[in-house]
Length: 318
Ligand SMILES: NC(=O)c1ccc[n+]([C@@H]2O[C@H](COP(=O)([O-])OP(=O)(O)OC[C@H]3O[C@@H](n4cnc5c(N)ncnc54)[C@H](OP(=O)(O)O)[C@@H]3O)[C@@H](O)[C@H]2O)c1
Picture 1 (tube, rainbow, N blue to C red):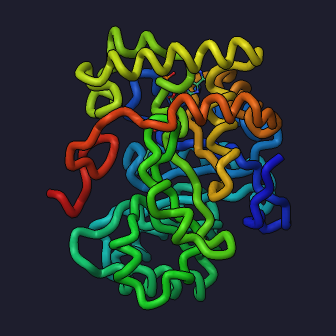
Picture 2 (picture 1 turned 90 degrees about the vertical axis):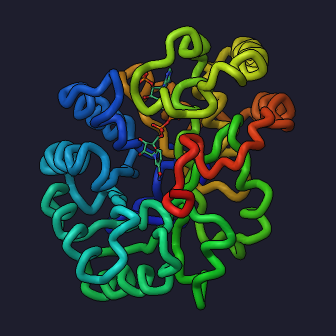
C-alpha cells in the first residue's frame, strides 16, 4: 500500500484512499443516512482519512461526519476541512474554524485548507493566520487547494505548506505540467480530488446520456461537445479493466495512486459497493494495468478553453 508520512494523532499512517465529504449535499444521490452509512463502511474497511469543508452543505457534511466520529477514537482518524476563499483575516478564518470544530465535535482538525485562492493576493496573510491557529492547537497541518504555481509565488516561504489538494484524474492532468518540478522532497504532499472525474472514470459512460442535475451539470468533462472523444477513451478504459478483472473505478484510482508525486486520492461515493471498489485501489498494485491506462490518456482531451477548473469557475476569474 502507498504510504504517506502524514499521520493520525495516534501515529497511524494514512490510507491513500480518502473519504470525500462533498457527497453529503448537492448531489442527486445525497441522503443523510446514506452518507453516514458510506462513511461507517469506509471506516470499517480500515480507512482513516476524511475530507470535508464548511462549504459542503453549509456545514451539513461536517455535522454528519461529527455524528459518526462521536462513537470512534478521534485520535485514530485524520480529519481535514476547508474554509471559504473569501475569509482572508485571522478573525474570519478562526470563526469559521470554530464553527467547523463544533460541527465535527472535536477541538482540532488534522488539516485545515484554504478552499480556493482568495480573489485578492493575500496568500501570505492567510497562511500566517493558519499558522497562528496551529500554534493555538486547533490545527495540525496547513493546506491549500486549487492553487497553481502563480499563487505559490505570493508566499515568502512555500515550504510552509504541508498539503495541496487539487483536481487530478486520467482526464484532467493539468498539474503534471508544473507540480512534479515544484515539489521538493515530497513537499507539499499532493492529494487528488475528483479522481474519478465525478463518475466518468468509474465505468459510468451512461452519465453522458443523462447528465445528473447536480455539480456534474456544470462540469466541462460532461459537456456534450467533448462527449464523443471522451466516450471513445472511456470505452477503452473499460476494456483494460475487464482484461485485468478489476472494476474501472479501482483501476482509475490505482493509476492516480501510482503517480510518484501523489500521496492520496479523495474519492466520493454514494453506496457501500462504490466504497468497496474505491478502497480496493489501496491494494491494487498492477503496474501493467495502470501503465496501459496512463498511455491511453497520455494525450488528454483538448479542452484548451481558458479553464480554471472543471467547472470553469475560479475566484480570480470572477
Ligand atoms: N478542493 C476542492 O475544491 C474539491 C473539489 C471537488 C471535490 N473535492 C473533494 O474530493 C471528493 C471527491 O471528488 P468528487 O466527489 O468531485 O468526484 P469523484 O470522487 O471523482 O466522483 C464521485 C462520484 O463518482 C461516482 N462513483 C464513485 N465511486 C464509484 C464507483 N466505484 N462506481 C461507480 N460510480 C462511482 C459517484 O457518483 P453517484 O453519486 O452518481 O453514484 C460519486 O458521487 C469530494 O467528496 C470532496 O471531498 C474537493
